[in-house]
Image 1 (cartoon, rainbow, N blue to C red):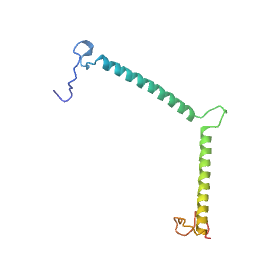
Image 2: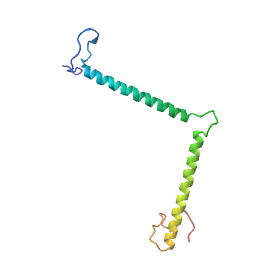
Image 3: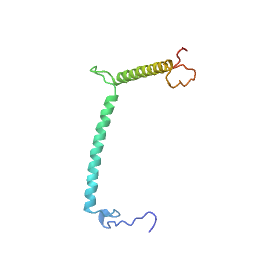
Image 4: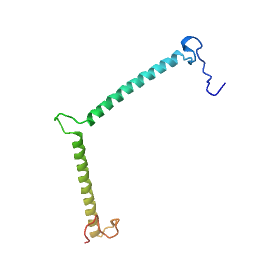
Amino acid sequence: MTAGQSETPTAASGNGAGRPVVSSEEESTVAEDLVAIREQTREILELVRSLVSLLLPKDSGDGPKLEDLIAALVAQQRDMLIAIRQIQADLLVLLERSGGNGDKPSDGLGRTNGSAPA
């Protein structure tokens, strides 16, 4: 046998020359697999179409655009991060003044987030 040949039996007659011989059980399994793949492909295509329709700008004025929603969420997240940093700085100052064993800020000067020295 040469390097490109296999030991799978092949059909030797008519149009099937060179094709592997496949049992009916294997054919049914392959057919079921193809049906499952076709269904999954249809579902994925439907999801991609839905996603593309969400991302494309809408001409109608029935609701906010996706860009506006994302901008609002980004602004809200920024405001939340600023508030969390301020709360963290206030808690560290309270711990330092109460004589607690709070962690020192990373700048090593006793100041939190650029606040003035006490």
